Length: 333
Image (cartoon, rainbow, N blue to C red; front, side, top):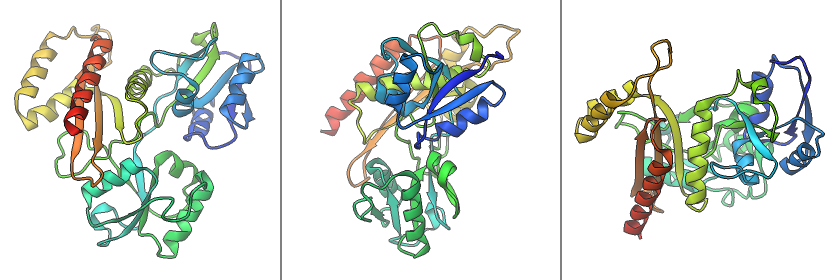
């Protein structure tokens, strides 16, 4: 930690909920926040030396050109804050199981509408166009959806958790979870990629040690994996991607409960993993990657999962993952 004041640029508009995250986790640092109209203005100010750091979301960083294998000239990702929950929520009195038959549900994303069809084929799923909400975003969108719900024009609406955390003021909300693990009784909702990341961008040469206490390696791995897969797969908006880090013991238990050859393979791999230093309290972990998409009716799910330890050859594993996903797409077509 340093007593020297750091000037951090953030967006004045909604940026996947990153701004309150920065202010909460950097509370103990000597920070002056400067608001800009958009991320391009923040980056220009950073390059001009007017600010020390750019505080932006993973989505904004990706749009600017930051990913697993690329960055903006003269800049780099200095710090990854711990990832916020990337899942979505449905706002309404009832959760999905207890919504009325043919209930009217809003979901902005076509991916999420297809996942909802998979869970409840009877639901009447509505887009922004259906509700004449095109061009309306963020706080105004939440207000409009809340009014439609209060007037019984909607039985519920699905939004990203970051929107609810910043703008949600009324109504109950229920998580649309990923249901990772052995829970076959529930339908899972793999979210669109790159949600929940808060990144600090610096000029090359900025001393990373200043913020090392809050730099999160798990968040870095997840961003690296999701950004690479999303970019390599053509930024497909119908693709759900999630990369998370879980304890090997948790993954192993889930697979052993299910049984089969996969659990035996994992057990063999675990036995061959070099354990961490005896003095380290960190558990042995694995990276778990999930990709999925669905057909238009939500009747067919195309899904791929990969698990590997951080010490594995990630480049080779993700190359295999991409090849297998492309093979799945060929079968789909």
